[in-house]
Length: 237
Image 1: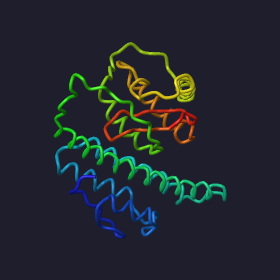
Image 2 (image 1 turned 180 degrees about the vertical axis):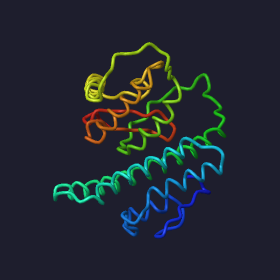
Image 3 (image 1 turned 90 degrees about the vertical axis):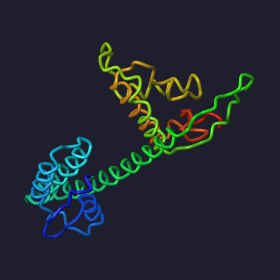
Image 4 (image 1 turned 30 degrees about the vertical axis):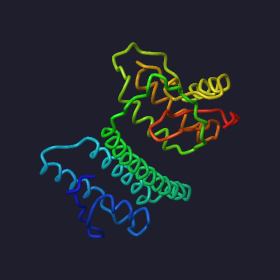
């Protein structure tokens, strides 16, 4: 969120992110948070600033919309089943907040890595250098996929390319597992050829995330910034 934006409520005054953290820790009751007032304050802030950064506005809108939906479920009397649903919605909100914080931390890390990489000037390998294949090191950190996605999506994307046949996440999962069964392991770059549409890349990464969550694929990277490899669970390490 913008550093200059502060929430001013009877129950809280301070940064929006801190308010979210307090809600997460249940130190501020969600029912006492006037989301409409928070939105009005944000719009007033944008009006004073004279410009709107879309990524920051997107963060705010996602959080505010989720809070509005949850408050609507909590404030209106409903049957017992609805109260259970509201409690589930509260748990979902906390999960979304945790996921939001995780991806924000990852985004900051990626920015730092990018800045550090820009200061590196590779010497290059001598002509007689013999490439050695490093052993695959095990890693199940899904952050590797997030990092690779951030590097890959801005390149090789042609939004004007001819439309491809739509593929679902389930279908892409089957395709990826078939490749791993046949080859044992494969680099991420080989799974996303150049000039593929953005939708295809997104579906591929969602399929990989689900396979990794189900432990049906193993992720590995020999060193930071090196190629990301995917292997079947029974592939020798």
